[in-house]
Image: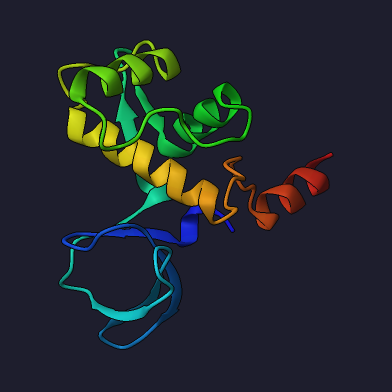
Length: 144
């Protein structure tokens, strides 16, 4: 499953898998406990594939940050917990993304990244590569 179907819903803990759309919103399933919820378009919802982390040079997509963590930890969970103190989290994140913008990336953001990565690992969602759309590959094939 790609990060295109994984959601963060404001005011709700954990992450959710998008199941289907409805007229007034969509149905999502919690990755924490498997419960299904209906979410309206009024809720603050973020798709993980659309989130990026500020660095001193540019914005790095969250999937790339997850891939760096996966490479560093050899596919395992992180040695730090999202409940660890601010200093420990910042030190860990600096090892993963040394040029992150310390003025715009807060400890709360780092906590979310660590928590989300570990939750995705528990669920077996660990393919953070960018998905190439079929249309793009077809166009490339016809241009040759």
